[in-house]
Image (tube, rainbow, N blue to C red; front, side, top):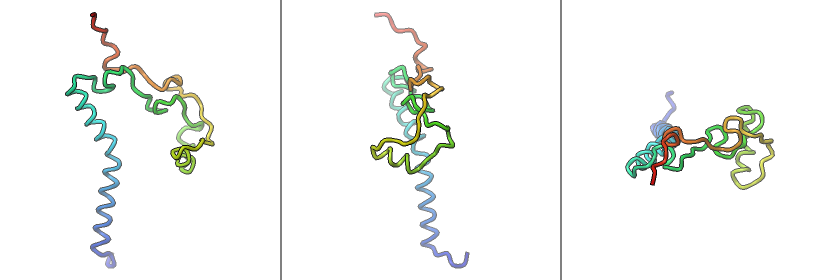
Length: 114
């Protein structure tokens, strides 16, 4: 610990701060969008679409075969750049391959008669 400079400590602190911000970004985005929807009088969860994306397949209806153990960083990067995935995909069992669910907050509300 005697050889660590103040610049290295500052770099470690900034790196830690950036990592924490990256991890917290989806939660902060969710909070902000929910408050904006609420101020507009919309459903906080779905924005009056009455549907929300499946959390397991992220709305695609397909998941990688093998579950969590099939994590492949290179294949994920290749696919994000627009390439075809080499990993076998199967239908999502959580949402029956539809990719979405009815919103639990507003889909139970009967429609207002006109």
